[in-house]
Length: 231
Image (cartoon, rainbow, N blue to C red; front, side):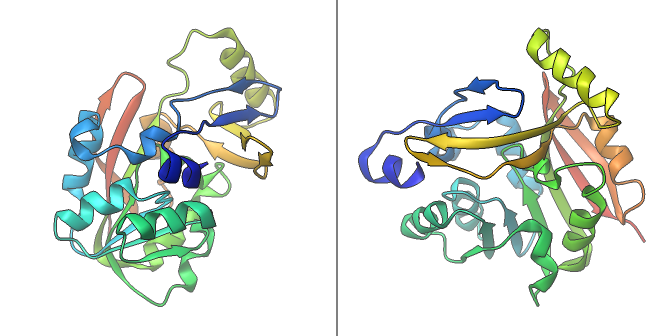
């Protein structure tokens, strides 16, 4: 999908949920926007990053490139070989295939980590979140900043989502946990868990970690949080 958009200027993205819902989100063009086209939340979020930055779920590199242009040394990680190929072709200097759950294997230290483009969702679930956040703590400096974007899943009136939230609650899950996969033409991604967490939920999830939510900027259901390491 990313390669086709990069090379031909068109493609599409379909996201399938495990209850059968199939939706076409904003489309891959979103992943290629320049900072002047971003929403204010994204533009403000990159300003919170400091020093050497780890871009989690970098995709084709829109945030990594912007951070590089601001003078940061950036390492982008993603699981998509195609997206990483595009990121490198667009100028991301260090783009690697790595799962966020495996970042502890990186024998390096970063001053900041960013999970933009709603990528706090990569923690997957309430059970997995401390593991992922612990890994990010292990590869960042003692006074590091984590910039994380998410959305409040309860700020919707669509019944198909409200019903899904209720099924999650009945199973003892957070309402914003979704199991999804991405489809493009004949290509089908793997099923994976993704978590939409309201600000108060994020604060609860980081409660037993070294991270503390120090600031939140919100616009409707979307928001960006600045997390700092606590002693």
